Length: 161
Image (cartoon, rainbow, N blue to C red; front, side):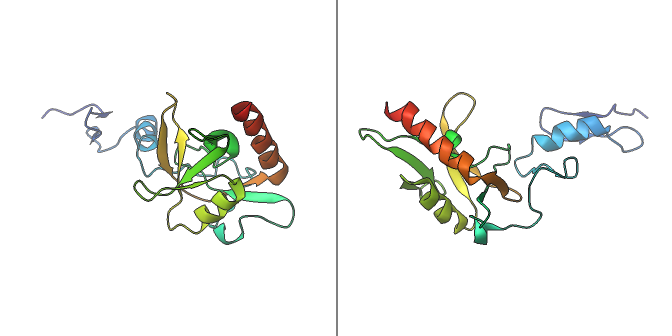
């Protein structure tokens, strides 16, 4: 009888060893490339993330804002999602599923609209600079309102100058 060494094939399927196990590192590599993977927070309990989905109260009384994060960890923050409008001297934020996208010029209005969506989706550039749609996953993350406002001003200066 021939035993397979544990490995993951090009088709993304596990090939366990003779004990039907796969080493933890191989399993980690496989799961982090899954579209539905969301990083667990047990490794960093002081990351200011909330355990429950708190979209109902996106802006808190203490100057904090809750924003969604994509599977890859990208946050819905101005420096990642605002771009200049074509042919206009303004900034634009695009949210929604493909074919049902809506554009906003105000970050807080876009965040409010995003919080009302069943699944948060927005456009942001990938590593090659191409704008694509990402889905929010996991708990919304707390960010300082002052930091959001600073990023909005920075984007205005950078993109509209």
